[in-house]
Amino acid sequence: MKTQKTALSLALLGAFGIAHADVLDSTKVQFGGYIKLDAMASQYSDGSLSSGNIGRDFYIPGLTPVGGADEGTTFDMHARQTRFSFASQTALANGKELKSKIELDFMATPNGDERVSNSYSPRMRIATIEYDGWLFGQTWTTFQDVAVLPESLDFIGTTDGTIFVRQAMVRYTYGGFSVALENPETTVTPYGGGGRIVTDDNSVPDLVLRYTHKASWGHVSGAALVRQLAYDDGSSIDTTETAAAFSLSAKINLGKDDLRLMYNAGSGMGRYLGINTANGAVLNASGELESIDSSGGSIAYRHVWNEQWRSTLSYAFFSADNDVALTGSGVTKDTQSMRVNAIFSPTPELSFGLEYSHAEREIESGLDGDMDRLQFSAKYSF
Image (cartoon, rainbow, N blue to C red; front, side):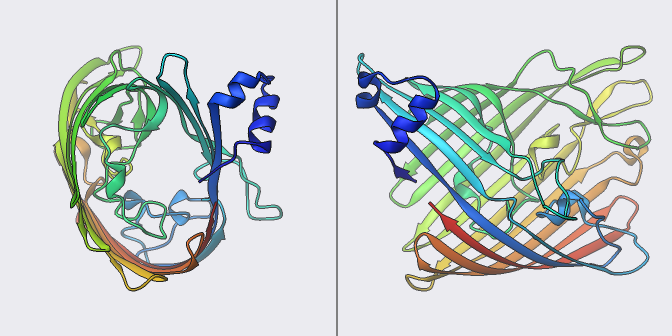
C-alpha cells in the first residue's frame, strides 16, 4: 500500500467537502489493494456443486458433496477476490493519532451471473475507526489470529481449522492484551435435523479476550470466547445457552521460512470455526438449546526457494461432537484438507501461482465425499 499525500488526498477530501489546509497537513490518505484472477478445475467424488454455489469460488468445508451418484467436474474462472481499500492517519493536536480504514471486495455477493457481463456487487469487508487504543467498527474478530493464515491461492486456505469471522465490535488494546464486545449471532440445528436456523435473537454481545506475545522468533497468542446462544421463535420457543471456547496460535520464523499453527476447541463456536461447518447449538425435544462441541486446527509451512519463488504446504481439520439423537445423521462429523502451492513473483507487486488441494468430508450417517482442485491465480498488488 503506497501513501498518496498530494492529488489523491485532495481528491478524496474534496469529495467529502473537506478542503481545510490544516487537515491536509496533518492527514495521510492511503489507497491500496490488488487485482486477482482465479481459475479452478474441481473434481468431486460424490456429485458436484450447482451453478452459483459459493463453494465453487473458494473452499468451504461443509459444502463438499457426499453420497452423490457419481463423480462431477467443474471449471470456474473469476476475478471476484479483487480488493481495494482506503485508509487515513491524522495527527491530532493532543499528540494522539486517529486512524480509519474502509476495505471492499466482490466475494460472496448474491448479484451477478456468468451469462453476459459477469457483474458483481462490491461488499464491505472492513470499516474501522481507531483512537487511543480503541477500535470501533467492523473488522476481523478478536478471536481470530489473522497473522497465521497461510499464503494460499484459495481465498482462505486452511479453512477447516481456522477461526474466520468479520463483524462489528468495540475493542480496546493495551500492549499485547485485547478485550472486545462483538456483534452476536446464533445458528441452530432444528430438533431431529433440518435446515439451519439463523436467529438474530441475542440480547448481549459476544465477549472476546486475547493476549499476544511477540518476539524476534515470531509470536504466540491465546484467546477466549464467551457468548450467549439464543433463539425465540415468537411462540413456543424462547431459550438461551452460554457457551465458551479457546483458540491458540503461533507463527514461528525459521530464517526466511515460517511455520504457522492454530488450534481451537470449545462449545457453541458454530459460525466462528470453519465458516459455520457446524451450528452453535441444537434444539432438544423440550425446545431448549444445547451447545455443540467442536474443534479444529491447522498447520502451514512456508518455504522461500529464492527471491522469486516460494511455496506453502498446509493441512487443516475440523471435528464436531454431534448428539445425533438431536441433530440427526445428516450433519457434518468431520472434514480435513491439504494443499500445496508454488508462487512466482518476477517483481514484489506481481505474482503467478499454481495450487493443488484435496479435501474430505464425512457426515454422521457415514456417507463421505472428497474434492480435488487445481487452481491458477494471477495477482497484482498496489
